[in-house]
Amino acid sequence: MLKRFLKICLTIAFFSTPSFSFQANSSTLVSDNPKEIIDQVWQIIYRDFLDYSGEYKLEKWIKLRKEILSKKYLDNEEAYIAIKNMLLKLDDPYTRFLDPKEFNEMRIDTTGELMGVGIQISLDEATNEIVVVSPIEGTPAFFAGIKPKDVIVSIDGKSIEGFSIDSTVKLIRGKKGTKVELGIIRDDIFLKVSLIRDRIEINVVNSRINNTELGAKIGYLRLKQFNAKSPKEMSLSIKKLEEQKPFGYVLDLRSNPGGLLEASIEIARQWINTGVVVSTKTKDGITDIRKAKSRALTNRPVVVLIDEGSASASEILSGAIKDNNRGVLVGKKTFGKGLVQSVRSLSDGSGLTVTVAKYLTPSGKDIHKNGIEPDVKADLLLDGKYKLTNLDLGTDKDSQYVVAENILLKKYRVQSENHSYNPKKSNRSYALKNRLRTYQFSYNRTSQE
Image (cartoon, rainbow, N blue to C red; front, side, top):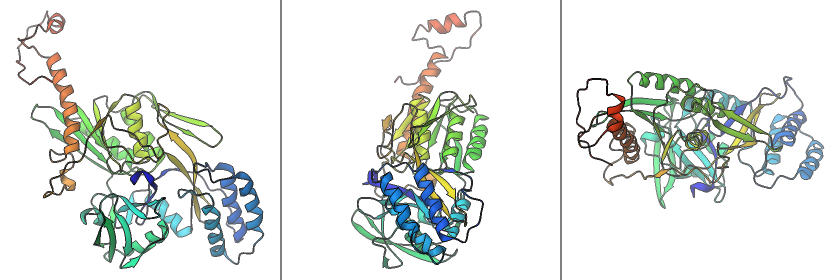
């Protein structure tokens, strides 16, 4: 069912996770004419909208303009209703109108500071249900046990059947310290989950060195979201870990719902020295190719952890690493969200997110609704009596991480064998390379794989 999700993924109060590209104001004039706001939206769609559903017909859109502008609107609120009804005809949940308050909140949220309970939600196009993509680590939703694929059916005891993303968000949001109760369906079982709303300040990167029994150091980095802070935090984390000279890295993108397009590109350039990162294609067929800039912060081996909650910008990064043979992908197939939304501000302070392009991986793969397959499939295995906590991620209690670490350790064994003398083998290349030097032999007793 997850494949069918149309991922609006607005974090409750808000965190916008489609691959967003911000542009300058479409107009710098403040207008008191409601029709002008309507026409600004119409013009943006006419000029830039990329249709992927097949419902958009240019002739009908042109006809609609005359019809909608022929009506009278007493104020901007009436115009906003008309705009939302107009956009419904596109059958694209990613192309959305936001009133001035919502638009301002979204701009604030991309800086990495949130208010609410900390979940990403999406709309299932087949069932019209509100579904959890993932909770944000360290938030009330995370600690309360909210899980990906949970279907939200009620809020504070009231059914939300037929509700939009925006309507759901407004009910769940509230003041810090207040309570909200979510009714969810999980595996056909109805559950009630009580949450206390809070300010959510997110550090988007967790990092540390894991020491292994073989003596190899493994750098572990978990990237939670792609916001304005992400590239700098990732850069600082990599540089700090590089000082400890790890053998390789495990980059964890599990349940990362995406975020800013530019953030994903900048982070990919920290891992990939040369090659294409991603290309975007508009309705006119124009392809913008973004490449690495020979500024990678490390060339050490990397394994990337992905799952069905890895979406949008996460898929750009994982696709770039896979297609450039920079690393190995481990886990489960990703979400499959390959559309780019541009964020446009309107003259009255409201805004519009509009689908303007689709992105392709370096090999040219269109992953929208298809996702990216891992190189090595691995499930997250849990003991029924044991609940994996935030602190357990990236440890030996995390079965997917263990698979990733073992891939790196296999490389480490091979490298160690090639750089050490083994009396059971001829080691001819080693001996020839070092024949003029005096050695202190080291015996390699590790198991061979």
